[in-house]
Length: 124
Length: 108
Image (cartoon, rainbow over all chains, first blue to last red; front, side, top):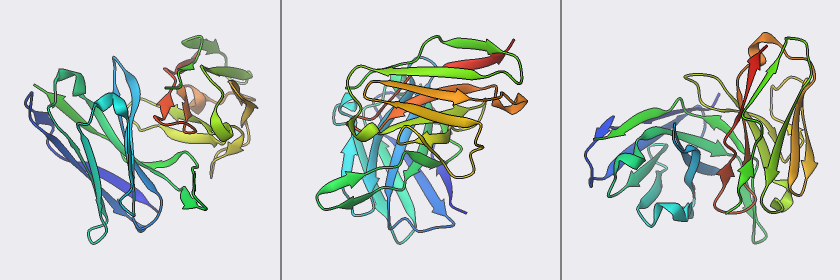
């Protein structure tokens, strides 16, 4: 059974870089789209972006170029880096899988069917 | 970006009743790529429905989704005690993917 687990510092100082890891167990990371989503009381659920195992990325432009995602297939991990953080980046951060694929120049998606438990990050 | 509106913010029902939740999109959802999630306190969202009307693996058949274009509905045919939670719609047809603000289903 596929399981995802987020990890990283719970407290980050303003203007620094938030770095999180999502460890994938019970399955391989060498397929699908791996997403990061965050949730805060003020903004609800916000999609941050995804990374495909091939390295292709798709980010939410609202984060204005501060986001970097990557996959490490040797460790079965994905990572998120968010630079120049402010208090507005305080949230619970989730990783989640979309079991979609790329075929014939088109991306196919199926929704976010497996989620990690989330990790709380406070910027202060 | 596609704005998803869920209204009202809270609905009250008794167990056994039928619940109908709505989600409206600011523009047509490409390929009907619309999902519904259930979230309980302290837990991540759980995928119930994808592609507007397909139940995710392991989801009871009392949950059903319908709609196309800009208007979508999640129906819970008979509310069980464990169904009282917050429900979110999510579109993944146009980047950036977006979520509705949620509808809380509470016990009357």
